[in-house]
Image 1 (cartoon, rainbow, N blue to C red):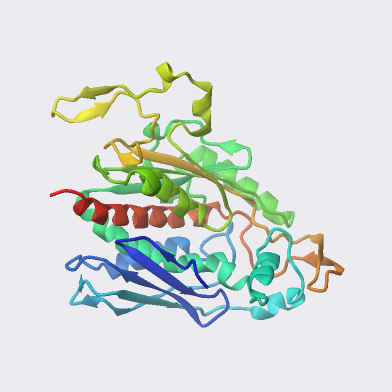
Image 2 (image 1 turned 60 degrees about the vertical axis):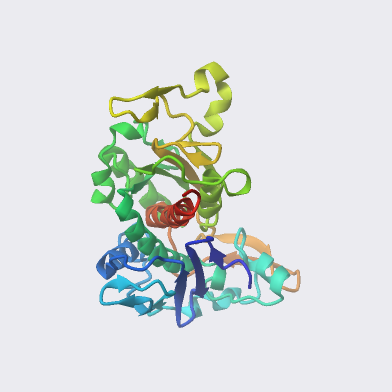
Length: 360
């Protein structure tokens, strides 16, 4: 299967399935001498793992990571870093009823059409379980980015029709982890949690938006033409399960403005740095970072598995009824937050290493 690798200079390859023995990742290109904080990596996995609250799937996985190469005496060696996460709480029997049926809006049919075979247990390689390996790799990328003072803040900004209306500049990012929804607005978070629980009780699911703000990226990261920084961010975020949309800076709202209102005027601050008075560009111009905050929004659809009867067909093309069983997220947003954080970290680590080789 092609398509399991990501990045150029900081490159990862993930492997494993939802109901197989485990998942893992190989990181190639990580520089030597980086302090390897295994507790931090484990903490990022804990943020993504199932079973952490009432509003996510109740599958119980501790997601303990085992580092098998590339680290010696607490530092990276410059050789490939290998990490494995073993599955402990698979219930493959929960999927026996759909072994030959295509679940609506899942990858069952497309995998079957492409490969002629599919792992129906939890979706196999198409399951969001695969993202555990990405988070482990992204946590290593974050360790690299620490040296540059870069911080990444993803949070739930919308669930269904419930939105955080305040601009991100007024939010306290330290409150993201203060509630199960991972929304930094406490009042909106309460309403979001209540909505998710209502939807779950009805056997249904709901979608929303994860917003992300990146601070501390210096000017000059990114490549022109095909490897633009925002294009790589878009690819990274859209590769996450259930993600259906990506916009950065002013995004689609920018089409309502004229150029005179949309342009970010430059000035020199008191420290002699070139800055912009506004940031509708989202911190990226010409595919290259300009030193301002990078911010974007990612739309996530309602989870496809619902505990309701739906019409579908089986592998023979016959009409069937499919009903979701097992343990599933009523809303993917809370667990998507750390995945977004760490996919952003992978992109930035890659472009960081590219920037180091762009000029003398």
